[in-house]
Image 1 (cartoon, rainbow, N blue to C red):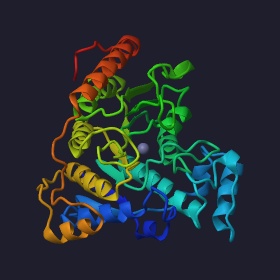
Image 2: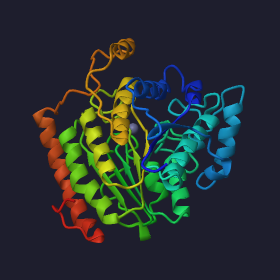
Image 3: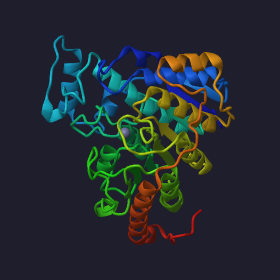
Image 4: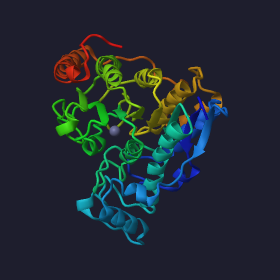
Length: 383
Ligand SMILES: [Zn+2]
């Protein structure tokens, strides 16, 4: 439907669990959906919910290794816990929980459906909250990711002859997606993340620029620990937006992990919801067909609040800052003490900011020198 936006969701998400002790809480999806609905942001026909389908097995084979898929499927149904560490399956990070194969197929199916919505249904933007599993490799689970939904969906777009810009704002490097498209110029991958110097997955440095025909089409902007909204927004304005403009993709795919927020328990970045809203407004402003995916975020209230704000931008609906009383009560039970939807503005300590700014300048200068000429761009001329 022209000019509409689709939220890909399924009540089936709630039927799975990584385990009580695992930082990845499946509740994040339900909470996001409920908050979006509570705030009246699902007004058909423009803003509608599309049931998340499971990815067909042949679509998974377009990227993933057949034996890896077979193993994942077999373990998923096993009555007793199984493990295969070569495949990254069954450790603390990537547990083999009951139904993990079906769970991963839902994430992947949602992203395929989001891509289909924007290219076949004339949808302006489709948001698969349960996507963005950017660490999954061809034959290895990693970073809570079993199947790489972004890769499988981007391959489906390439098959239609479309060129794709993939932008990943998760606090962790989008290593699995970069790796899949490292040799091609048909996909531009850009990842903004906390530096891999001493942080998972230990990749995503500026010198990782792509290979062969793909040289210049893998872009990384690593941030120092404690980087804040000002750092994030500069990287966005000086690198992400000019490169999207210079590349002229047919479709934009974004991974919108929100573990860059200051209050996330797993990372050291210090962004607020304001940075993510800035990114979402910028993506919307490109006017490109937009496949939006979820991603990291280990405080489930942060996830719900931020993706609700993102959805409101997609749907073009203003949302007030103050949350309704019944929502405040529910979020309080989950440990959220405020009654505000957005974070209050907050910047890093001046020493941390100075360090982050100095590092950022180095990275931006390097990318402007090495990459901008390939796209016919001049540093400083921001679109
Ligand atoms: Zn992450």
